[in-house]
Length: 183
Image (tube, rainbow, N blue to C red; front, side, top):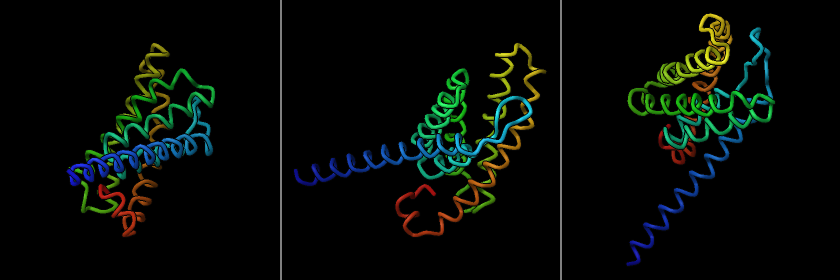
């Protein structure tokens, strides 16, 4: 009976830890999206949020990473006065984090920064494609919406590079490897 109670307490403790880490990554993604904003020629902006979205996927895994990676940037859209983009951001960033995490867990582990970068590319595809299609829906023009693709590609490239470097650096820590075994 005691072993069952200990196991249940362990599951509850792990779940609580993941909820806290997910909330922390969501907050970090929100702040990273809001603090450094580089205006793009298309009226939007480029930011550091993708770095945190990808990193959250690598560290927290597909489900928790998707939750953190979607809530933070969608909240940033609302707080920055672009609530029209929040629903799209919620779906797009969740897909980003989940795909990057699944790619990392399936193919990337053991391949270091190059594996992280390759999985980052897989994760960033829904961002570039998703915002292009969402803008096309809003503008009623695939061609007109294509103007946003270059700035999204620049943001994607930065997010891929920064998250791969950060994850690689964090992976050198025994503490991080113990606390985030998915990395």
